[in-house]
Amino acid sequence: MPIRAEQMPLTLAAYRRAAAAATSLGQRLLDYRLRHGKEHETRIGERRGEPSAPRLPGPLVWIHGASVGEFIAVMPLIERICARGFNVLTTTGTVTSAALAEKRLPPGAVHQFIPIDLPPFVTRFLDYWRPDLALFVESDLWPNLIISAAEREIPMILVNGRMSERSFRRWRRFPRTIEALLTRFDLCLVRTTEDAERFGALGAPRIATTGNLKLDAPALAVDSTKMTILASATKGRTIVAAASTHPGEESAVIETHRRLTITFPDLLTVIAPRHPERGPAIAEIATTARLRSALRSRGELPGGGVDIYLFDTLGELGLVYALAPIVFMGGSLIRHGGQNPIEAAKLGAAILHGPHVENFTEIYEELDGCGGANFVADAGTLPVRIAAWIKDGPSRDRAAVAGGQCIDRLGGALERTVGALEPYFMQLRIRDRAGDA
Image 1 (cartoon, one colour):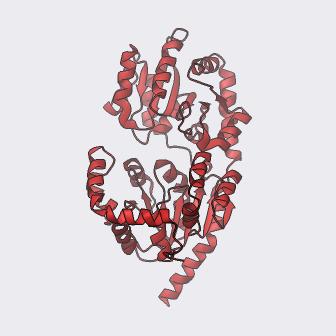
Image 2 (cartoon, helix red, strand yellow):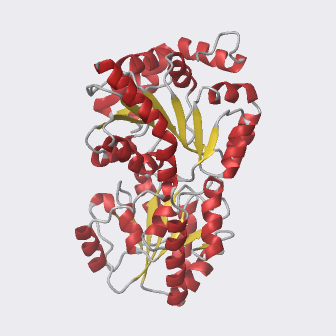
Image 3 (cartoon, one colour):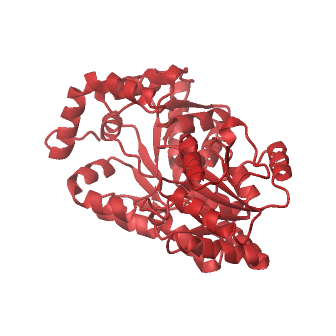
């Protein structure tokens, strides 16, 4: 159902007018992002809604997620949809997610960059792809895209819906705006009861709690050849890792390493920054601390003299979790909201995390409760927690086993999501058969 002009909140109306007026600046924005490595040089046209792949015939299911995390979460769902005989268009907004899609998408699925939320770009995108069903992952809600899809009467469903407390408070300041967007969705499939309550309070009319798809995603791939090389290079060493770290956390991790080497001189600390391009800058922090670092992006290995090994590469986080028995999850010592611990738990790591885990509150509560993860109050406590697990291997191993069992127990979201989507798939089949008749 299209939103009539008299129904549209002033904030949305102003956004659409501003977006229409700013269309001429769209290319400047793309040029800026390209210079800073945030766009794909040969696929920049996709951000203007210009396709780089053919639209396959038949019903098309469009799945949009912001970045790598959302793409990984819905990968099993994409495979299920393709197995039902539907073609799938996936869209994301980052270069890293595009690289992952190139490796992981099954036959019948294609990836495009999401167009910038400017009216001509959105119109061009929808005119070409003509999706029959749109699935938006978690919370990446672009007004022009949503309103334009609603005007074309494309059924839209939110899957793996997430609404953090911070986002909820922010949207509460613009209640008519978020309500006007959420009421365009046929259904909101959300992760937790807390998410359901927040979406309901913001105006979503139809909500079902299906669980977190990230819990059902397969364990990250671990290349056996690379793992053998790493195991050989680190043989006999004590290894800890900090994964998906953010600025400010690496300094704390490097200081932790410096303090721990007094007791554990063979210690190797692996750091996998959330944004791999920050590898050289983190290496400079290590140098300032008089520690020797090596960068995986340069083909270097963690030889005997290396203190800090930087996994500044894409698609290799599984190696980090398989290599290090103790993993500190980043984004949690700073006010970022934490990073996903599920992948580390699935690969047998004992997990440490800071106090700021609002993005994954339920999962961290479960992991803490079952003994699969330990809470670290601040940077000063981090070396104490790590040292305790290094000294007490059995306790660390019990935590790793408990974490894996906890994640397995929380699964099932994929089946519930597919079940909720089945009526929409049936409608697509009926329409397709009627078109062939």
